[in-house]
Length: 144
Image 1 (cartoon, helix red, strand yellow):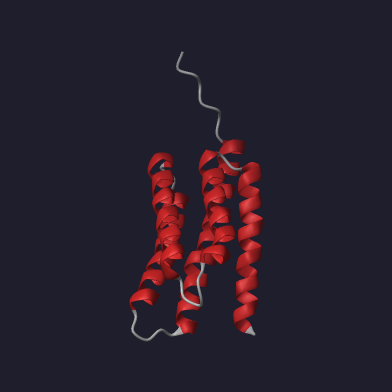
Image 2 (tube, helix red, strand yellow; image 1 turned 60 degrees about the vertical axis):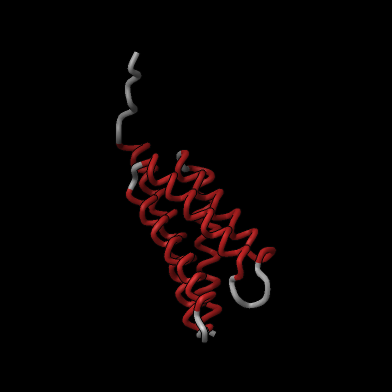
């Protein structure tokens, strides 16, 4: 029962913060939200059986690399946090593939906390930071 409660909480967080990022975010927030929401939409279609599989792990590797590129160009702390959380989720997939015996509860819990709730909260921090910058910092003067 507790498992379904925090998984549902993670879904609510991702949809809420993803929607806010698409609505009120800058280029980094919108790009990250598009990646995360797109990957969450594709996940059920790529998953074969119970485990992560090659296609799902490849998708997560591509999303992690894309989040790293966003982090590199945006130079904002929240992008480093979302990249780290997503990398943790991707490494959880790789560990589940390589493990001889897999503990489903440990896999699902780690993946849900890092790849789900951690990514969603990072995106929420990004939206809050962008709103703070928009409201409290003066606009940059043009260099012309």
